[in-house]
View (cartoon, helix red, strand yellow):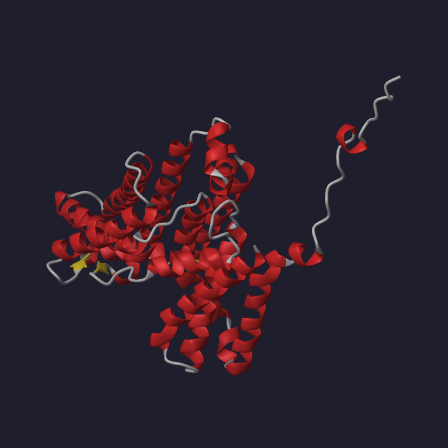
Length: 338
């Protein structure tokens, strides 16, 4: 007589969720802990570090890179990269100044001219990002190659427009535009409020929407995402367009600070944005993105620069070297963890 069939308890009952090790659960607190320790060290080295004015200065300067880093988080989470954001910001800045200077003499109110420039910056950023996405998805070109090429194109175009010099905003328009950077609400500068809004929106989109889940699925395993009927090309293109919009937002906040654009505008912003994303815990290979960590990473890098400026421990000209070392160190730790 054949033996009675046996049932496998593991097959018939759902498995209990495995508990993550304590070190793994606390892993996301690493950037926060690093930021706290840096703030303590900065206060000990120079009491001026802990003042309200210095904190607002650090956060205001973080806003530009932080906003771009939020968009970069989506791109890296999807398995891509964008090396052109600094050059893109420079070209957007120069182009919007040219447009506003052309509209100013036509008799429109300076406020409306500034509003037109702001809209132009957002649209231009979205178009640049959309073009990147199409070249990568439809042209089947590696993101590194595409954005490395446009890095040179964008910077060269701005240098050509500026004839090697600077593109300066008209004085009347500069006065109307100034509050976008120098204004404040409840004692907090406007760029910080915008940075917070972009970060919250990014976190909601990445963690609470179908689009965000698709972005993470593509970065985790693109082929499986295709088998699951995810429109990979469309999602990837949208991530680059989203990054372009973030670059536009950062640029329109940055322009009133100096009122001009030069061939050095946005120099090394791509390094700082990528560093903020990686320091914040987003996986280099894609599949896992952390907007909150990205924000902390951006602030942490700004705090490092601020401490170097206040204490002169090393030359401020080595800021980029410090950021490069941070990227390499975090990438090494991620590799060891995997």
